[in-house]
Length: 267
Image (cartoon, rainbow, N blue to C red; front, side, top):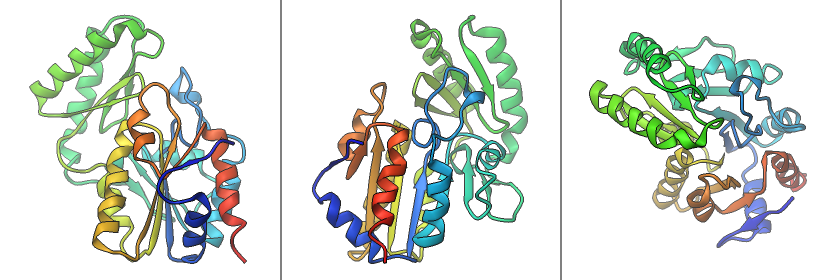
């Protein structure tokens, strides 16, 4: 595993976190962070060792939360062995807390039919080679199998966002249309770090910068708070994330080793 640090040393970050055991929270993106990217999004599963180490992290050091563009039901299925882990789907528009049902953010509920209609429209209007992923509260258009279609897909997304009053989120070979409003990974971090003195966030793509920014803002407001930004390398769109990170690793397969090195600091 290759680990790179910025201003703080790797050892000092681990020590500061271990000192706050029981008062920490760990947030993880899914695709590209805990699971390798696949051509077919439905075939994506956590990398080897991820589920086991997240369970140990949750038991010994602090709460674990998954924050992803995936629907909450998809995330719960992938992490069924971790019932005590909360999942925030669709950038926080859905949440399922341990033992609870999936809850939809009230601001997004009026857009269910809009998104269903938009998915049908995308399938009809976009060329062969694109993949339309309907997520109930958002629509993602993937062009990983046809990279040359990027300009056309991105333009289509911009036009539909303007026409329907939606937000456009760019990602790794994908554009996603979602309801307007301020709900995103940053707002999840702002809410879910309340009462904690330490939080880590692991991400790989530009959407994760909002979570990084939330940790930076929390540190500025509370000098005792420790925020740790971890970037999982992504040559396609992750350069800005690595520049903003405290630590970066090479791939999802390297995440378990980093977490085990943290757990080894505990008594």
